Length: 138
Image 1 (tube, rainbow, N blue to C red):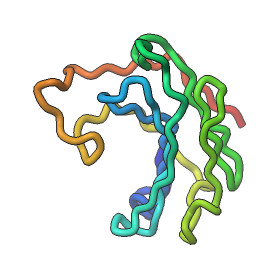
Image 2 (cartoon, rainbow, N blue to C red; image 1 turned 60 degrees about the horizontal axis):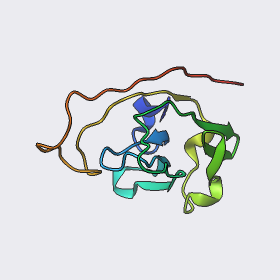
Image 3 (tube, one colour; image 1 turned 45 degrees about the horizontal axis):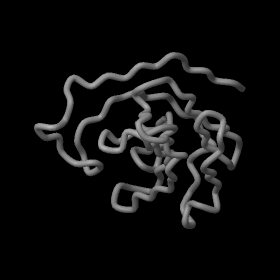
Image 4 (cartoon, rainbow, N blue to C red; image 1 turned 120 degrees about the horizontal axis):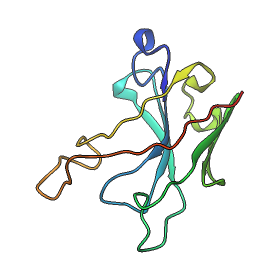
């Protein structure tokens, strides 16, 4: 998710909430992370790895529920209703906490970048993401 004020605050000042990140070379692990900071040169992030699936299971073999409980001054991350990470203003290293503002969803299959690196001949193409549902409660 990205802060709705991204056109005026830019990234990472607008904030980013990664409800679920899966890196292809780690098919049994997911990550929940937030990003913030006044500018790209002062980019901060705080995240955690969710509970790992047992071999030979992978996140590609069946649906799972990735969720956050997002309250003022607190975001709790869950995998299949198991809490594994919490973010509060105390985790911001003295910088502004942008996560009490409006955000919007982004769903993407990213390829390359600093994490995990550029694709090579072992990278499977085309990429695919299946989403069963998105539910938002207020």
